[in-house]
Image 1 (tube, rainbow, N blue to C red):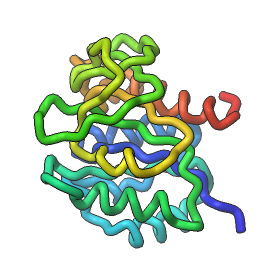
Image 2 (cartoon, one colour; image 1 turned 90 degrees about the horizontal axis):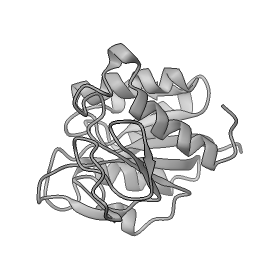
Image 3 (cartoon, rainbow, N blue to C red; image 1 turned 90 degrees about the vertical axis):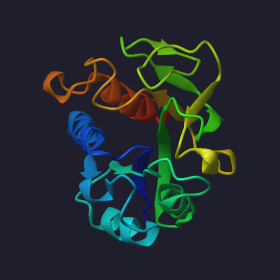
Image 4 (spheres, helix red, strand yellow; image 1 turned 180 degrees about the vertical axis):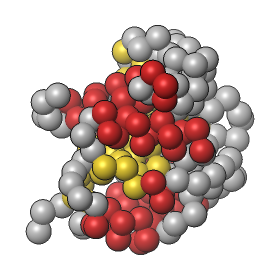
Length: 187
């Protein structure tokens, strides 16, 4: 059985959805648009079925808790996807939030709003925090699972206009490209 190659993005609001769809096209991937939502509307099982039906890999999936305390819908779906025997998670784009409700997770690297790669976390606006831990609302499950790489970014499609879809969502695209690169894909 060939496992489907999946990249998870921990955001799914309307602006993030458009940025993730744009970035997925930029890398030649497929985006499961139905996985968007604030919070994620589909269950992990429903998203896995959508992944199985995607035309080709890599498949980009959005998971979002909408700031729910504890393990929300996005985290529950993410945990199911990560544990699925049909899925190989290539990496996770961890989206920063500025609220206190989120979980802090160590990132392998991040991209600032200016497109600079850093080995520290960023905030919601894509500014370097000069710290290893990124704060976000759909991240606590990441402390319990192993994935090849976690890449931090600010708010997809925003970051002071520097990730706007009208300029190709370059920061979200860079995060997806970094995950592919870490898994031996050539761009």
